[in-house]
Image (cartoon, rainbow, N blue to C red; front, side):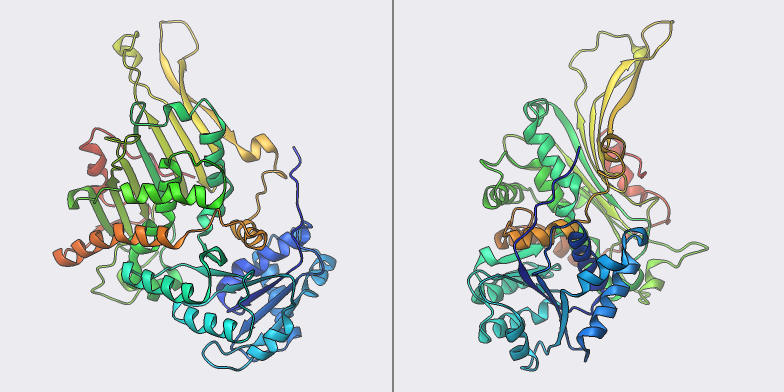
Length: 484
């Protein structure tokens, strides 16, 4: 199997915040990889823009260092890197003032795709949008990319959308969530809607429950200042897990096109029931002999910010009536692992005796680190001595099935940035979708604040607070083991 690389049209991409951590770790390495793959031609232009006083040659050195650090060293070829750096230039820019804007407007070319990546805090979005328009760069065919957080509640999300809508049409705004760029997330749609085997069973009649887990083994690290103001609910549940939730639960769209897909995701969010306090668990990791606890890490001894959330949600529609969705995310857990597990109901009648045990089918979509899809089926255990049943996986690990070269997937940012250039918004969030997610999240956070309770402490390297286990146990179910 050979993957096709379809080149994009020549473009100008301006990375505002081009010297920041996101540009260094993700954006520049992603663009280099797409250049090496032959998707970006030599006519395109990549412009870094930031407050730092810097010449183009210095920025090219910055970009080269970032690419070497955050790309597999075997893949960084000196000639390819040198050719890529010829596309790169730099302009010193004042987001809140006028300095640099006239120079930038003279650098971007007319009659070609223009994209502006706002790799800065949301507080600057309004200033940037205003100046892009003032200096004639916010034309009808230009695109802007904005990173999360898309506000910190419904009110700020609405204000952010209002600011952007004042200068840009919704079709020009690309709200990026890197989880939607993962290969397996897109394969989820292919599995659901491209196989007659699954879609007829994708409902409350056949599905017992669904688990979505995004576990991290690391702590907050250098993000402590931001994280202590956000917490797991705002940082992970409201966006990343919500997007996975929507894709697993939505109705089949009429077509695989941006608004058809996003319309169905929006319906899921609007059909979500409010989560009762007894169906949600908050946790905060303690320290151990090797690593500090969360409060020490963020230098806030009184912090009540959650680093773990587990909850049970229900969707009020015909397809999923009565089917629980269990969502779980946390830091400093046993391992780094993200998966969606669709647990099907037991057979209505077992013809086997009690010694055969209880068995059920589970479809597991592994998002990271070992991307793949696994279907658990029940078979007879080989050998004489009666009918003994065991569960075995029909496992499609992409690395094994496609081979190491084909399964070396592009980073999510590679795919998403190329989608921006193509003008494809399917994997980006729409403004009303963001607001609906906050409308569901805000009451939960408000109840926590009103109750004044602290998150449950949990030991690092485990599965989170014990209360999260009870959330499942009282329903006669168990969380899946966190493993890579």
